[in-house]
Amino acid sequence: MPIIVLDPGHGGTDPGAVGNGLQEKDLTLTIGLKVKQLLEANYIVDVRLTREADVFVELAERADFANNLGAAYFVSLHHNAGGGTGFESYIYPGTSSSETGRRQDVIHEEIMNFLSGYSLRNRGQKEANFSVLRETSMPAILLENLFIDSVNDTNLLKDPTFITGLSTSIASGIGKALNL
Image 1 (tube, one colour):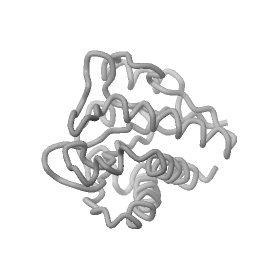
Image 2 (cartoon, one colour):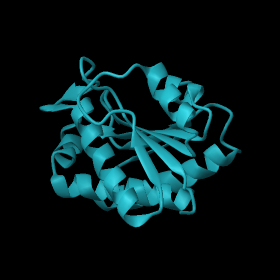
Image 3 (cartoon, one colour):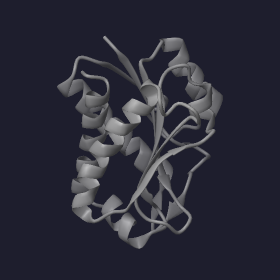
């Protein structure tokens, strides 16, 4: 049974991005818990979270957790800030032609299929030298689910129906990417 590690970004003393009455750490945990429930309800998988409460976990601990479990996939959940709008996904530089890149293609498309119904911008599939992508020994992806400082994006992130749909698209993307 494959082990999938979901990594709700930030937590505890690290709120992550803050804007329009929301904190990134709260949203990532809400979505992470929903994705875990959806994956376990629909697939034969073992889903673990790097945190299941509002606690701070060091970046190195997040990667070590997944590495020590021998996880099949690592999915880090985040929300963007900085004046933009829309969705983007990241993998480690130089891995786009590997299994990591193939999985990014599948998950990115699945999430954008959902988000396009809201006319949200596809910011693209990108590469970055993020710690959790660099330090994990299995294929890994980091998802930036909308902008917490965009009023339009935030209004969606405050809508429970939208959060459920987003979580469902993430879980479905993971299922398709891993052929579960």
